Image (cartoon, rainbow over all chains, first blue to last red):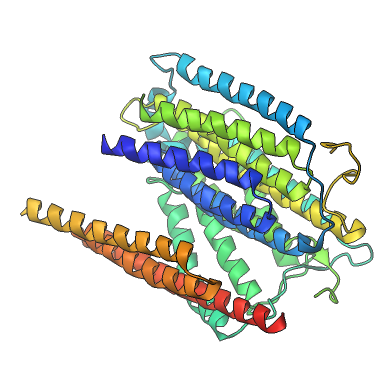
Length: 311
Length: 109
Length: 97
């Protein structure tokens, strides 16, 4: 009963925040509202018994996306003001969107019951993979191809972001500069938080084999620590053609693909694992992937290379 | 009404809100925000389907949950790319919208 | 014994929630950004401390208790520093305008 009260309150708050984000005139407020919205969603994910998703939403949806959006809102503040859409267009759009919402809401009540589920299959084969976390098993054993392609998508996005470099300045430094008011407090945080942050990231990746967690969540925390250190000016932003950077970006997917092809020879099909070594291979993949994910996410958040003289 | 049906309704409402924002905001950054809100509604839908598939001692069906994790990461990559494009557009033209929004064309994007 | 522990947990969490509510009232009613920042930072740390203290009474394992205390410490560290940075930014923007 009490949890239903909480669910209702959270539901109303989320819908209200969603509406506010879309309507409020000032973009900076909308972005901050979006970050709060992401954090409320994290709680909802926990209520839906999806703790891995909650971790990912908090780290990537709330944290990194929020950072990108706040940065963008700051840079675009002096953009030319925009006229609002005409009232008739807004009215018709509102009607049609309400129709979409209502039909989707009807679908919720028409979902088949008892609900079909792949959970029994997932749990049945869990022992063969040697993992304890079924979501990790889905990500790295049952649907490993999806995870590999997801990693490749991240790299492609990074290449697209890099391709927006200013002409004549390739290769350059991504446009992450220490802020003008960098003082001792930011230095203090950048000195004392990253060691613990890196331990958390490694712990989340390692523990993700048996408890909620995993390579993506751990890699995001490590990327956040790297970004903190770069923003505080403690480490210079690497130029995008540095060898160690490119090698760490490629290491994850490369190892994944190599293990995949080896699986073709040893166990019969691409990304099949031999049963006795499944856990070892999965752990190797996860470790390499965490490193690559940290590098990719950090660089995606750092943006395209810009000339040195830009403030 | 059970908890997950409630969150399913939230997902449906948020999809409609995000769609509305995507269509009626001319400012590209606000379109991006609305797109993210729309995506979160779709993820909530998946989450509800996963929760309803709770079986075999688990709290939810792990396959839709894994799909949502992948989707969150890919949505972040798309947002990062969109913001890079947007800031380049702003640097080159000084405006943060696509197309001409200073006439009466309304929702032209 | 568990009844006493449960009662203490509920009391501590309720006090923490009241602190958070007070912070929200401060956010809404205080006149300018710096005073609101002050209210929020103090209240977040204290409220979270009470909630963590309440939850500490519920676990029997040392490791979980250490993790909870660690959560509180890290939130204090980052929230305190972020508050200082925001305050610096506010003061600088006032100086400029």
